[in-house]
Image (cartoon, rainbow, N blue to C red):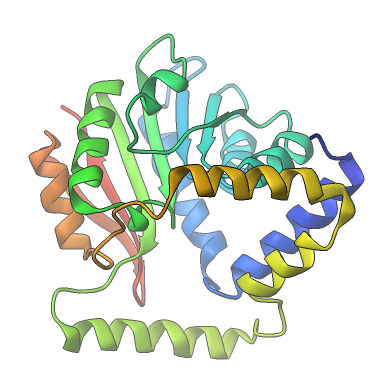
Amino acid sequence: MGVSMATAKVWVERWERQQRRYAVDREERFTVIADIVEHVTAGRDGPLLLDMGSGPGSLAVRLAGRLPGAEIVAVDMDPLLLELGRTHHADAARYVEAVIGDDGWCDALELDRPLDAAVSTTALHYLPEPTLLGTYRHLAALLRPGGVLVNGDHFPQDGPACSALTAHVGRRRAERAGDHGCEDWQSWWAAAARDPELADLFAERERRQRTRGGGDGAAGPLSAAGHAELLRQAGFRHVAPVWQVGDSQVLVALKD
């Protein structure tokens, strides 16, 4: 079910443009995450990094560029996106298919030492709170002392009034950036589904989705404060937001 390098290049580049439609400050958020990981791993040879919900390797390839000696494990549940990343960004990471939060997902990573950093962007918001708490607890166990968990996402504020304001700031920022000529999420997937070279991967993707079923689903996006509380419950005593534009934030948790 592999794809050619040329096909992977086309769809990964279109993915990048599509994602910028929803997060015009996406590149800066990636840079901030890399800044944090670089700082925490300074002086360490071959740091081990985990990219959760990696998709086609967007964050992994940027981390590999900033930390060329790092070992990066990229995990996602989507076989199509993983294959695109495995082909187009082959040297950036080791790609693993697993459903974050499911039983045995940590074992699937096949880590041989503690993590120096675990990172994620716009991927953990779909997890229900009990699953998210369990995931944070697993990550606390996987990280070395002094290791860091970095989560970049769109976080609503506590309370509808402030959430509306931060969302409004984000929308106006996107309007000024003028990236709305890019295709959206639905049109990217619809177009990719028409590519004959991706047909087998789409069939496998649909089979996996049927096997997983609907799941219990998240009740709704959790605020940054809500994530911080779960992180503290999971054993991270030092939790703080380090960057924000509108409702887009980077939240950092350090392990003692």
